[in-house]
Amino acid sequence: IVEITEHTTLNRTKEDIQEKYEELKIINKANFNDVYDVVPSTKAPYKAGALNDKVKTDTLNQINYFRWLAGVNEVTINDNYMEHAQSGAVLLTTSSKLMHKPAQPSDMTNEFYQKAVGATNASIGVNMSANISQNSPLAESIGGYVDDTNNIYPNVGHRLRLIDYSATSTSFGYADKYGVVDMFLAWNVPRTDDFTPWPSAGYFPIQSIDKNAKWSIGFDSTI
Image (cartoon, rainbow, N blue to C red; front, side, top):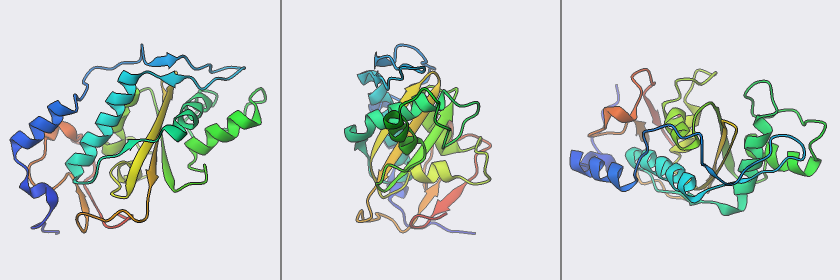
């Protein structure tokens, strides 16, 4: 039994949570359409495409809402790697099943592939984590990562990465119902609390956690 007597989130009221929910305009309706400024190409010649501002705002708000619930810092969009994430989403559409390292299609350039697989497999050469999803709108996939009820492994690794206290920025992409969400980490970020419980201590909205989701408590980068 872990008794939590001190934590950032213990000071929140129900009204605080409602205000944050409304401030970040959390979406509730699936949106697979009208998500691009530039539509990606999922066949040769492959093209990353680009998300529109609404989807970028919704997705970032979803991430920061769950991070706020967990009692950790907000993150910003890492524009330097948005094209990588978009390329990664395109790469995922070429595979017969969802995987972090799909094979390179014979008609895909090596330049495009290396950028794409770097985003899906966390191998861009910087401190980061990679999360991938299928059949869920990009912004709404964030709740799925945090619940982690569909993880093929018996752990909550996706959740840990999304609410990692050391994350400072994020990049994400979406193509044909495949999504990529990368979190960029910094070793020098101070921890506000000694641990990160989920659901967080104090008041917590039951609408923000699936009834089948595992509970967890993270210390440093472990759980």
